Image 1 (cartoon, one colour):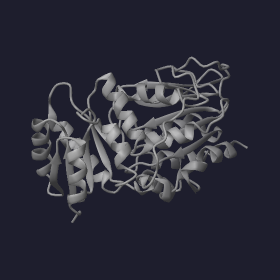
Image 2 (cartoon, rainbow, N blue to C red):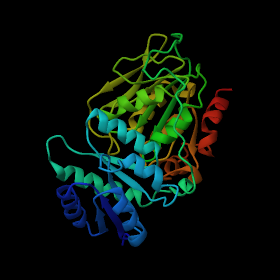
Image 3 (cartoon, rainbow, N blue to C red):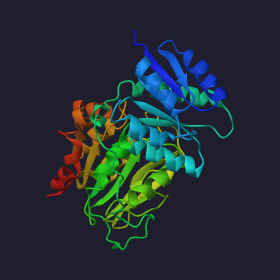
Amino acid sequence: MARMVRVLIIDDSPLVRRILSDGLSKDQNINVCGSASDPYQARDEIVKLRPDVLTLDVEMPKMNGVEFLRKLMPQYPIPVVMVSSLTERGQKTTLEAMAAGAVDFVAKPKDGNLDQMIDELKTKIKIASTANVSHWKHKQYEPTTTGGSGVAGTKAAGQTLSTRICAIGASTGGTEALREVICGFPKNFIGTVVVQHMPAGFTKMFADRLNGLAQVIVKEAADGDVIYDGRVLIAPGGKQLEVIRSGMGWCVRCFDAPLCCGHRPSVEQMMFSVAKNVGKKAIGAMLTGMGADGANGMKAMRDAGARCIAQDEATCVVFGMPKEAYEKGGAESLVPLPRIAQTLAGLLR
């Protein structure tokens, strides 16, 4: 029997607290041990109740969710799932929360249909309960410095068609893992395609944020985008992405299609296309994430002659996707997160 996960709900709305509590309590493996209306009350409840996971509203009075996380995580590193609005401000604040230590997020539905959100929240709470956030203990918050232009696609760069391609997959904990890896790439690094499990709307803002930090150009992929050196394409939320041949090089195909391995975009679908259309001219990396999306796709890449690695357990938030990729023979080695960019560069030599 799965263990009971103790959850503390933090939201300034009494109605939302009741809806979340009632919905989550229907799951026999989740125990809503308490709730709080603001971060100050939440701090006292955390000390008293010692929950396994927090759900945290992005926007709250007195102190917003991001500020609260920056104070909380160095003292009490607890897995946190953000409850976010789909507004531009909500998306921006959610990405800031992920940088401040949140494990994952769910988006409040525009149509007011909360059943699907509650189901997603149940799943992500259970995943979060297995997350490793211990590295946040005593860590001082350091704002990320901007290394790029902050506007996707506006950096000065050559239009050199890639002769090699890097394929990267990530899920839970992946937004910050990708930040570290992509910010480690030199500005002329080979063309890179990325699948990060994230809903529509968030991927563009995520790409823009990375573009403002990295030396390479980072943009949300659009159907037909050519893969150039010095450019990273992030699969758009809600669509599948494949790499296909285009003249002397490659481009991406972004399209509506069924879920693959339970996801859209799916690492599996992207990596199978890389195995088929790029073969031994590809390299790959599997970063932190729950489940097995991409494990068979990475094995297909290896079988086609690609060199592939996966993030090691010690630096993963969730050691699911990397573990599966390694055990199935897709990843040839497990590498600590701080060394992944350097190791990928080494594979090219």
